[in-house]
Image (cartoon, rainbow, N blue to C red; front, side):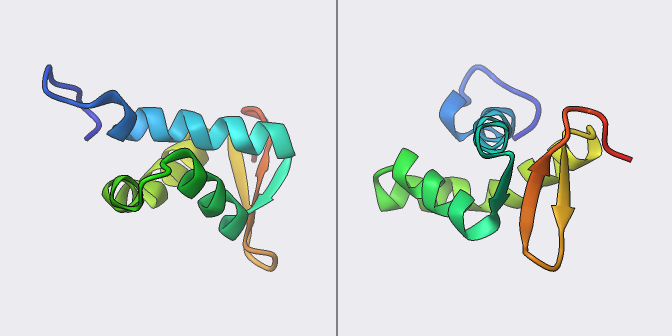
Length: 87
């Protein structure tokens, strides 16, 4: 959910997940999608928690891409941090 309400669990929101993804992409500079998903599985150690946030992974990546914070490389299925300097 993009627009927060008082009942929203912060750790299951799109903006929180986007911040977690951005933190990993910044840390690794370039990260493959599978590695990113593995990191998120570790963060949400419970499988049911990961299944709850998994539908938000692609929209979170879309948000970061639209904001110009990441780039996607199709050949390697990876993301790179560009800090708002993307084309």
